[in-house]
Image 1 (spheres, one colour):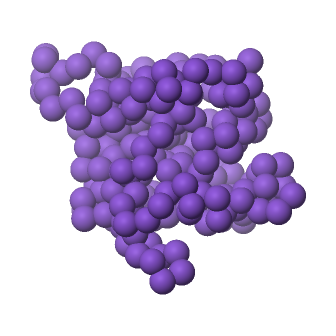
Image 2 (cartoon, rainbow, N blue to C red; image 1 turned 30 degrees about the horizontal axis):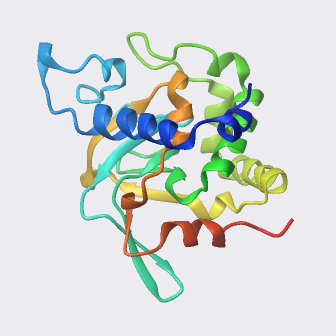
Length: 213
């Protein structure tokens, strides 16, 4: 069953609660250190490797201190807890597609496109001593021309403007970065977290990015 089929058939409330627990409670709010650290975080913890571990093709969540100022018309809003597919890292900033701006059903469709295109990679456990990376996918995401082509293809398939969801984040303002495992990508699909973006109606923003079929 694909992500979209699973999303359409799931118990939305239960899946949202499970997604919130994994991404927000287990990954971001766990403050334990050393031998007491939650096993849920496991290899996705970046405390020992940050910021060098931001890698195109991997998914991340982090707190963005102060938030990122964005505009929708005349309205200013702030991006507080980005959930991104990394598309670039230059040592001073991280760039990625922010899934907070994407409606849940569109996220599911995007995950189907991504995981079907790179099925072997997304069926693997990407964490051993260091995260595994699919070099082809990493190149496609980090190369601006190739990324533009990928997002155009995704827009044609899902009628959503993914290019409007690309953001860059200054690493000086990033706190508690966490990688999200490949076998937990359904948590990104199901996460309902309007508090991540403050100062605007997030659902309204998401709907504005849906294109005409």
